[in-house]
Amino acid sequence: MAQDMPIASPVWDTLSAEDHQRIRRLYTVRDAATPPVQSNFRVAAVFAFTDTDGQPQLLDGTNNETCYIHGSICAERSTLPRIRQMGYNSIDAGYITCDGKGYITPGMLCREYMTEVAGLDLRLVLVSGATVPSPEGPVPCEINITTVGELYPFPPVYRCISRYEVLNAAEALSAAVAPWWAGSLSVDSDDSDDDDGSDAQGIEARLGSVAAASGVATSDVYRMLKAIHAETARDNRDILHPIRYAAGALFDDGSIVTGCETKALEYGATINPVIKIAKALEDAHDAGRKVLLLAVMDQYGVLHGPFADSRAFLHEGPWGAVPVVVHNSEGDGALVVTAASDLIPDSPRIEELFANVDEARARADATSPATSPDGKVHKPKTSHRPGSRTTTLHNILA
Image (cartoon, rainbow, N blue to C red; front, side, top):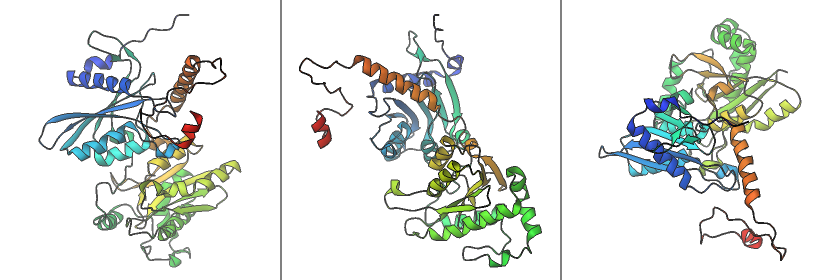
């Protein structure tokens, strides 16, 4: 049976000539890039920005990978720091494509990074890797137009605030959002006067909506939040950053696990609080125990949306349906319960990505030279640039 012929996206004709030009540049950037050595899957980005002289500019970048996944970098975050270095008045639009047949959405780290560097209103044009030819150049088969804000609900509330101003901002926000505590809870409080049941009506009034949305008793919601707040005191490396974050999860057996952020001078060595409790979540899942509720909090009692890597961890694992309670700090400040996966709208289509990896591997195997008559297997070409330093292991395998 003949395969359906690809067709151009009808959205193409609604885009401007400027969009067309940028998208065709995007495909040129992708096609010129060497596929990264681990996934063999290219992602390319082009950002349009206005420089400090008021002139329109374009800058592009691609993804790159290391043998340790955590050290890899996405196309968006390889491009945006260079724009910052060059200087800009505004970042106006981003265009992203990949080697997949469909379009790819930015990953969580890139979405979170863009909330601060480019803003929630940044227009993103996501185009499929598959195209159809035209006299003017390739036309994508699929186009999705969105914004950073649409892709990253409940963004970091302290974004763009310096460390010298953030404590004042946190204190003001804490006073403005809907409180979950009785009024006696403070950074230095041990909450001892809240355990006698005298505030039961107040707890019900403050946390009743959370209990109703999550199916958890108000007293258990309060126990979890108190435990998380107490955990923030363990995050004591204020010299690195003054905001103290902690996370906690309530299980169906009534137990609570908490963990605080571990800050490090090396950016990538900082461990966020949800990842700190990852083993407890995994052990509970293996034992058949269910997570009833999860939250991330700072020392001022403000409840945050989990940070980027936490969102990805929960969504890619078996915790996508777990209720997460946050303050709607971008809106009315009310307490809101949302599923972890709802924090990742239009998540990257992992199955499609891995299908392409398998296809690429099959093509590579099919084109690899057979063992030569002398019994030696010739090493395939890698993405290391000619003349670059290689490790001893690479030399041994050569």
